[in-house]
Amino acid sequence: MAFKRLDAETFKSQLRQYLTPARAIASPQHLKGRAKTLTQIERAFNSDGKHIFIYGDRGVGKTSLAQTAAYLRQSSDARPLLVSCGGARFLDTVRDAVKQSLPAGDAVFQKKVEHKLKAGIGGFGYDMTRSLTSGVLPPFETLNDAVQLLSVVSELLSREPVIIFDEFDQLADDAERKVCAELIKAVSDRSVGVRFIFCGIGTSLEDLIGVHLSTGRYLSPVQLDRLTHDARWQIVEDAAQAIGVTISRPHQIRIGQISDGFPSYVHLMTEQILWSMYDDPVPVGICSQEHFASGVRQAVQETETTLKIIYDRATQKYSDDYQEVLWALADDHLLRRQTTDIYEKSYLRIMGERRHRKRLTKRQFSDRLNKLKTSRHGEIILGKGAGWYEFRENIVRGYVRLRAENEGVRIGTEGYG
Ligand SMILES: Nc1ncnc2c1ncn2[C@@H]1O[C@H](COP(=O)(O)OP(=O)(O)O)[C@@H](O)[C@H]1O
Ligand SMILES: [Mg+2]
Image (tube, rainbow, N blue to C red; front, top):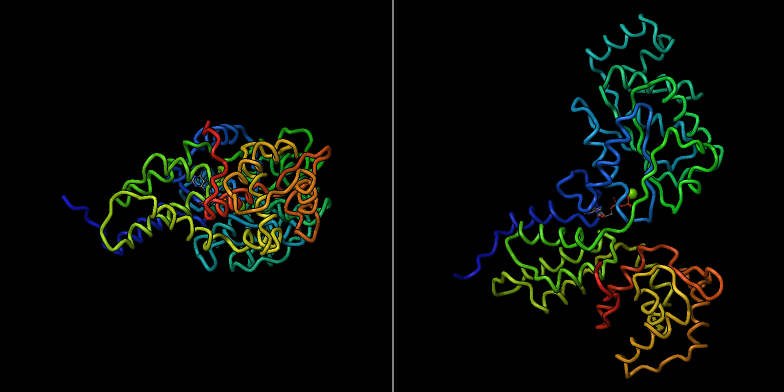
């Protein structure tokens, strides 16, 4: 029987649902490879006064995990609140969250607030009551304002409210981190029934929150790693199934390898491959090498601009030398590598496939590596001393692999364990 293509609307709607290269996920069905972590978070939430801190590389899936965990915890009477810590004052961020939760002009809520105020919570005056019920909140001047307003949220608006404080790494300075630490303590010590999930780019909790929460009593840390190969394949497999086509094992494996465990590349490549199959003049049910290659080419085009800029700046657009050096560095699953290893294990192999190109000597090679550390090349890599190097941002590795693949150079093909 000939393969029958989906109609355009169904195809697009399935694609949108299963492949989200530019949007964080909020449901366990689409969140691959994080079941254990979700359980860990659920258990932490089970102890009173505990909050969650998720940290890891940019693009690894922090916001997605936070949103999914928040939806699981949040009682059905409201939605989790999500705010970014990019502003100048942390208290303003808290205020934004409270504001999001207020049902402006709701008569029932107004009654509840008035009743509560009579009963003596908060100690707010008439003005605050008005503010609360109109949805126009005055600035929070003190920590106490924030705690009281949060208790209003937890007592009047939702049984189990969750607030996600995203992009914690953007918090202005140490003074603001201190305010945040004090808020966490106050909320926990005074048994305010609200839970926080923080997300931040970083390699350690200490780096992110400093010394203020050193006790560890209030925060449960979740270090988020790149997706396992299984989870990467699951994204491809689910999407292909939803469309009713096959992306074979070897192609799934290759998508997983190129992505280096950063899910957005898996979504993007799969999306573009499925489009290229859909666009084939003959209805096709199985992905061919051509569909795969055209999907990769399109994925390079569609990659987020900030990543392209990093790559172009580092390679100065026209220099193949620099591209090949970057490809070599991104070839291994180890994030941090030493010059000799990069040169002998990766660079020489890559150049063996590029006979038309002049090979750098090891000396020239280390010179290029060193240059890639400089601001002229956007500091795309970091030197870690004694000839060790790594990418400043690990998410860049996936784009480097994608570019190499698009030039017909296969890197990152080491096992998938
Ligand atoms: N566990 C996962 N399974 C499938 N896709 C994921 C997963 N986690 C994240 N993604 C996808 O990866 C991309 C980056 O996720 P995001 O949560 O925004 O990362 P971060 O907040 O760490 O920068 C998004 O496109 C999202 O849809
Ligand atoms: Mg995020």
